[in-house]
Length: 325
Image (cartoon, rainbow, N blue to C red; front, side, top):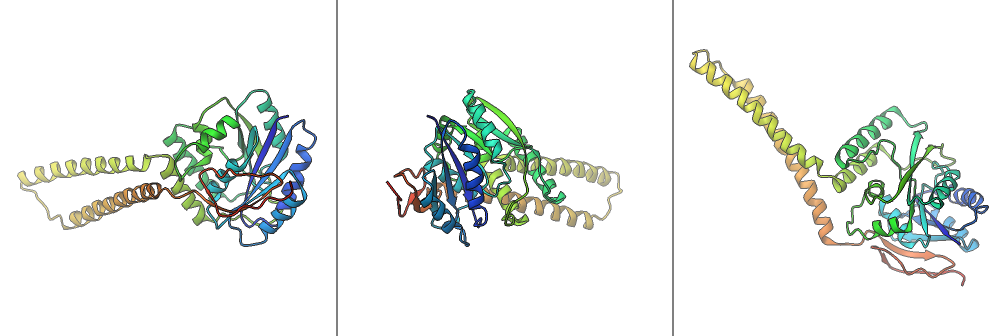
């Protein structure tokens, strides 16, 4: 019998752990498959881990993975994939904004032979217009840079074991899971879903954190910002040639005028471009430095499961505790 693993990253989601487990258990139990839920506690500051521990000890279908600190959602997804045993794996949010019923639809498509089933957003729920504008701009940049349509992309997706192993084999530490699942290829199809309202709690994403998330992922998956520097240089050169020709014409015609204001504006423009270019280059150098240090993506301090799991992917176990047999 095939085994399906559902990976649920959790950060300060104590109110949603039991709800997510109950809803997913209800939709997966009638299916003719074995299943497991892998909750990854990403350094939560509330009682998320206590809630995960409770259901993991009561239900043999549930595994709890605890990070030593907060490493971010991408690391939590990778840890969940590394610890999952399934013939296919589903990644979804535990706040139930990704509808559990769609998992069954994904599962049926996988049984038909598809190896990657992408969940794409039919609607984005009740998010603010500013957030929708920001998200749209980010995905347009990513789509242009990666040549992959990411306009309605999400982390909600099912992947066959072959696709999961391909992603886990990639050595990069700053991985962008949402794009990598498309980059690895394999036989792919899509399923539309409507983003649901949170049943409890509030979003952990602020404008600042979303901006940082966008910048990190653009830098990790694309060199497009470096190409902008070449564009800046070309524009500056073109302006310099135009103004140089204009200045020479005025000089030789005896109509040269004082250009103090023009000089100041040019210095400010060129200086700003140079500083921005250095900032972009410096950011990429910082990412290279982080990759060269070769630190693990995450540190796992504890695993609670009815099975003995010794897989940690590119992370590192600090401790491991197995419940039951």
